[in-house]
Image 1 (cartoon, helix red, strand yellow):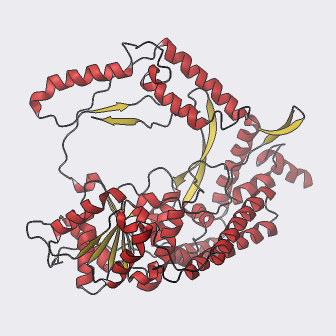
Image 2 (spheres, helix red, strand yellow; image 1 turned 180 degrees about the vertical axis):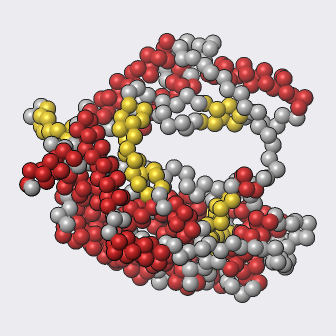
Image 3 (cartoon, one colour; image 1 turned 90 degrees about the vertical axis):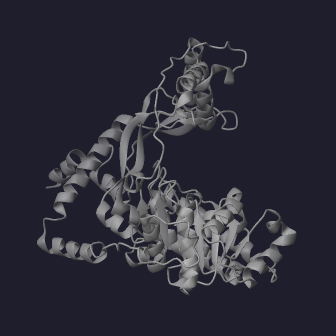
Length: 551
């Protein structure tokens, strides 16, 4: 029997370098299995990834997952228990469809008629909870938000709306708002209003004035603090959450690396809390709670996607754990508004709700659906990720453009219908194929340009530089991957951007661009051509991205 289990552990579901128990532990902790060799260089030991053994271990990891998927449903009692839990948690949500055709917009400019999708979006804001207006660019999100604010106030659902918009758009937002509601009483910020000498007076105007809407910039919003007590409570909650995770990791004999990382995060939070508590209190500072705001409209909400994240996963691309202060500030204010409005006071609007990472959906749900995540026990990212996502390992082109590497990405959804049912309680999603907006037709023409010999030599040198960076032989302040990819973009456009002494290649991309733009312009200048766009498609990243030069 022992021999049989040894074979199961080292052959069927494991390898001689990683037995089935190690692979199973990695799998349960949402990590891909990796095998390292220890080598000695210049008297120092260094761990190097063993590509062959890692690939074998990951094949066994997939075999364990596949076998588990079949085993878990075999026992009738276990199957009934899981089905019951699934039905209670995830199969009990039917997202509501909102119809705004009956809404009579009092005070709206009679020359403007909102489209059907705009009326429905306003109904979602009025009758639903926190809302994400995830509409295509040009769908009219500005009018939807303005109409929602005015109707909410007219119906007594809110007293004061605060619009947080990109800094350079505050005045444009105000003019659009007044075009829709000519009699609206607005308070709009300027740069001077948030200079230290004027900030207190301006915040007092927000707090004491009876405005239909207050329009401020993103950076100005961050300068209005939450009360010190609330900030301390938020940090204490985070410390408590991470302490639970540390205790759990130690109890399960978690990896030293994981525990060390979490303890480092806890220490950072404790320093932050100590600094907050030791700061001299300025009682005359107007806090966010004192403004009297009970509706928050955030335009271009993708700017707040970098919210703190705790996870046991490691070395996973597409899993951003970086924290931006403005995002933490926004999260605290959203939690406050959830308390005072019962989860109905926050409206986000963006044309790109998920741009390049699945974690952005989780972040949006934390901002807008925190109580839902609590109810379904998904507030911790690893619980959410194991329910709705999966890491996938694939071979991809290395950033330097030569050679391939295995890369693990958190880039695959499953249980998608259940996730979307939950997400659509808050999200009002409209794409271009649903809206049929009146947009001009574009004519695409691709011009392929071959690199010169000088460019080829330059790209070769990029590969050599990248190899040195990966091996750790060069100091990051001297050379790094960001610098290499930036140089690659320059070379792709024109070799003279890297070295002004190199000759002007008549067949370069820049020359091809100028020649073709002039040709197209001459061919079509009678056709009311309004815009020419040149796309630089040669990028050494290998991820399909490109730069757009609009002239």
